[in-house]
Image (cartoon, helix red, strand yellow):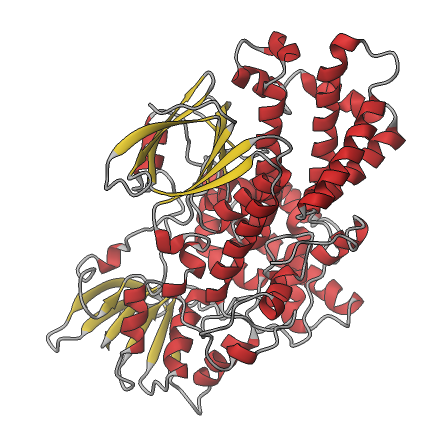
Length: 638
């Protein structure tokens, strides 16, 4: 086992979107020496993950939402747009993107997000305080054990050591492992077939689509936004053959208006949905009634809202009420509803940009007809006598006989595995076998975590300083925060998780080092655990917040600005002012022996209040920036 004590070490497993965003926050938030190790098993996924890596995203694959919503920083809305227009290296960019002026409401190629995240990570490394370092390493975490003083992580191929395993010691670990693959049962006979594309976001998948004969008949399994990427790629390169979109729900996404801007409306709680759950049909009837009424209210009271985004406004307005509604639904029924209506929920919650939808919608017109929606469920795919692939589609109940479509190419949408009881990744299998991770009980999606994202074991208690970020928290986001559809693990959610995980991880390190907290436990981990929300110290945190309310609020404002500032010099000035303010909150009569302990507890309380303000989702990011007074913050160049 390799163990060092030069400085505290935090391992982030996975360098995709969630892992990179969390690493950036750790580097920016840290007030003392810290080593952030960012581990990634696939070099091409670093700072990208499956959604944004260059090899799997041709230039015409654009973000599903507008460029103005792609900033990695919720408190800095236009950071991505500014980077794309003023900082990005456009050498090698093709027309029209090479001289394209990006705007908040417009499109942007998905593949450039990898460069953006990489540059923001490098910026965070460069602007971190002295003693705060970033180490980027290739390798795969396959197991871990939690000890009294940290976490022992088994890593395969650490630093490209060709498959060898070694055990490394870290003070804390963040698991940001991304999407888990599920092999579709209907494709068991064709997984290795040349005419079957299992992953359209792989380099091989893109090459297959790009080299396809224009007259070929294509079947794309699914009709969600990722299916549009494959269809639009074919259509833009002049495809003339028929493209079938197979959809179980028949859902087609709507197009954002040209002037669309994210906003939040206020709606009353749908009280009818808080009544006891009787059965599926009765609940859905109440849901439809309340939904229709809410949409009518938005249309009536907000005539300036485009009809295309009315459902998005309602879905967002209902988020605070969803946890209480979900409490009424039995777990088995909840899982069934999420499975059945997941695509429909996503389509109600988000639209797609005109750049993509204009191509899709035109090809679906009767006058064009190249793109056809087939409502049904794929039962099987098998090679046919003609050498093509035969796709068997079970139609809705009113259609007795299945439909068989012979295709030259079949593209399977990215089929992810939400149930972590079924994932095949060694790390998650080993954690579950030891009781260190538990599939989410209510939803069957992701794993059990607490409010800070710490993994919960079989006993429902945190297993130690091990956090999750991104997709593994899907189920918790649904039941705790009312996030539905892809919003349970999309960029907007990950932005907030990166803040809360980084802040709480650093809090555990700082409070755990206090000798004065020895009475809370014999080990550093026990001391840190005692300082969390569920501990006896919560009451003291609350008392600190009540005493000297004006001074406390001033400290919170300074901490908000410190957390939001990416330039080291300004962050150091804010930290000095914050330290001075926090010392005044201890009071002139505080015993010297208690001064250090109390100061750190005050700091933790201030930090938690600041994090709560930074992650407030009741307002838009633009409104949040104004409310927190962050407009004047200067960020470093590049």
